[in-house]
Image 1 (cartoon, rainbow over the protein chains, first blue to last red):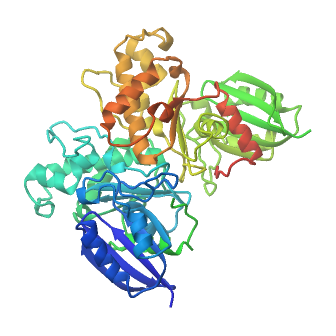
Image 2: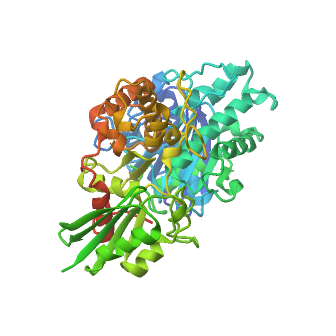
Amino acid sequence: MTYYGAIEAGGTKFVLAVADQENQIIEQISLPTETPEKTLSAVQTFFKQYSLKGLGVGSFGPLDLDPKSSTYGWITNTPKVDWQFFDLLSYLKQHICNQVTLTTDVNASCLGEYLYGAAKHVHSCLYYTVGTGVGAGAINQGTFVQGAAHPEMGHVIIRRMDGDDFEGICPFHGDCLEGMVCGPALEKRTGKLGKLISKEDEHWTYVANYLAQSVYNASLTLDPEVILFGGGVFKQTHLLPRIKSAFDELNHGYKKIGDQDSYLRLAALNDQQGVLGCLALAKQTERPLIPD
Amino acid sequence: MTYYGAIEAGGTKFVLAVADQENQIIEQISLPTETPEKTLSAVQTFFKQYSLKGLGVGSFGPLDLDPKSSTYGWITNTPKVDWQFFDLLSYLKQHICNQVTLTTDVNASCLGEYLYGAAKHVHSCLYYTVGTGVGAGAINQGTFVQGAAHPEMGHVIIRRMDGDDFEGICPFHGDCLEGMVCGPALEKRTGKLGKLISKEDEHWTYVANYLAQSVYNASLTLDPEVILFGGGVFKQTHLLPRIKSAFDELNHGYKKIGDQDSYLRLAALNDQQGVLGCLALAKQTERPLIPD
């Protein structure tokens, strides 16, 4: 039997999966993200019974994805202190599988949707996640958007709305997109857990507007055929309609996007896009991609 | 003799060139952009004596670059009324050369710098031009960044600086990047021609900051290995240093970019990048690119 492994290494949890050659998932578990020692020893235990032909990994970052770099495959200056400058790629090659393909968590999710989900029929797409942090991955003409490193779209500058005096929580930028709209920012804004914030709360107007601004700018920059949204904050079903309406106001009819409901959409794969993207990277037999 | 043609179709002038198989330019002229009838009849006259094997065109836009569209190859809703909804591609195929490769003016310039100029040693780059308008073209892993249409990075939303009460001149957005910093915006801000504005004028602070914001956001979105600047406004030699300093302030050490002087640079090809990019598209024998 030929097996492929997937690790969706998120900031709060790791999702691990094994699939067969027909891409059927045989086993899948979820673990909390603790220290590298604890979490990765559980990862090792999970994969031990399988001899993997390939392993695809979508990890939180920042990651060094430059093969020419001396820290290639490391998690670099993450706020998660235990993982700072951890050589993830070498660890996985040594302990799990010799053949590892590594990208960002958001790239893996973007790829999952591109291959099997809401972006299945296009060549260029953009996938946002809003939860503990804000990130996005993009595919242009079948290739990840990625230069020396990888995009960090969660940290773009937004224009503050009048009346919003929240200072933001990004340790680098203060009031960048992530600093203003991620889950912890929402909690700090309102003093409530995100899921307990009433949908009438005025802060949603700010959150939707800042997301719409960022999405609009990314749309003008990357020109994707479809833009997808996932992550915990999008469990709030009123958020995407608000973003759509703010997007329209910002656009003033400038960019022709056709049917807005096809252009701005929720991810379609029920939080499985990351694992499916990782499995595709493990197999590397799908539509052409240059993951590193 | 085998000849290749180039048309850099800008909003104020057309540059036409013919090169031989060794990419040596044999003849090059410049014409004002007037009505399609006047300008294109001069274009026809120029190319008449050459039997072209291929023609590469970088045009002002917006352009329809979707081969599946019924208006593929048209200049669409440009503010230049005479050119609105003009079928440029068909005209050129019918009157100049059967083999035409069309992209945006900024993509062509980006390609010229990528093949022969300041981005010669990278796989991902971004090229901005600031003149009558603001635009940018990008290459990701050897492929133009382009989905259903093409980027319109000149129109991104920026955060206004305190003290700047200029309302902007973009007919769609008012105070988007182009609306705030293009040549005509500068003239309206100051009542002077751009080249007569003193470098001590406070408006340069705004212009540099808004460009830095846009470049920073694009850097976080596309992650290019190098970002280049061209166009009339960059004849102001104090502008790029100001942008660099504003970029640093916005970044707060977040994104690692290595040597800033290598990362943010002036275009290297003395305004020939557009023509050279068009010639490469005409030949289509260079590093792989998917222009449409």
